[in-house]
Length: 291
Ligand code: PDD
Image (cartoon, rainbow, N blue to C red):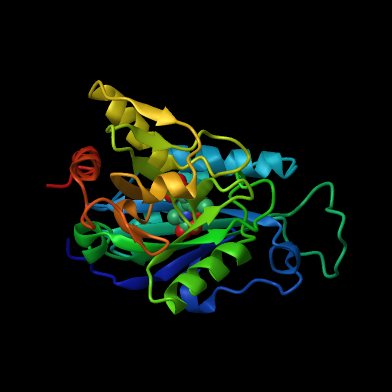
């Protein structure tokens, strides 16, 4: 799909106003900067349409609630803003990133103000999501200890462990990373949910808890599979089980459904995307109106 914009779009949005991305400024005293006191969402755009925007905004509100923010931003305003950013930037395929932090107060106080003045920032990016080499051939993933905090269900901007994991993967000549907890089970990918297909053909992904993010794409996939009479098994799986799986894949608003063909140096299945993963890709394509 041809994008009129590739890369970060010219127009961004800051605290209710459209500005150029270049002129957007926030205070260094922002609690997002000082304490990672903020949350974010990434919604995919395909055919100029936002995918599952409502679910992303619902999750944003939940993240803010869980962090004790007294009040959510206006949902309707955020919806309209998302659409306007897509249009203003001519995004056919790509994403909209939205970040909300507890704001700036001219100092550094660990305790949060009772009535925060939120900082809200959003930008759009033109990017090929579908029909990438990763979708066609699959990706190679390293396994790395899950050193993140205990509330991974909150989509916090505290992403240092994720950034380190992805950097480690690139340094090793691989594409991405999956986190493994102290008990040896896979929690999720550095920025995606993790799935395996067992040798018996069961499609397995970890059950929701504070250990992982409730992926919007994961939920969409579960809906799509159940609509076709299929079943997904929500349970934990070990890194060892994953290495011996018939297939593996990752889902996110950016990865959509990306096959994983190597995990921790071990080839998954025959080292090529398998038939179940291909079926998941086809279901998702159909759902977003791709040919
Ligand atoms: N990340 N798990 C983690 C840790 C994630 O960061 C993400 C998404 C997901 C998948 O969630 P969803 O299907 O709602 O995108 C799971 C986004 C894409 C990011 O950080 O860029």
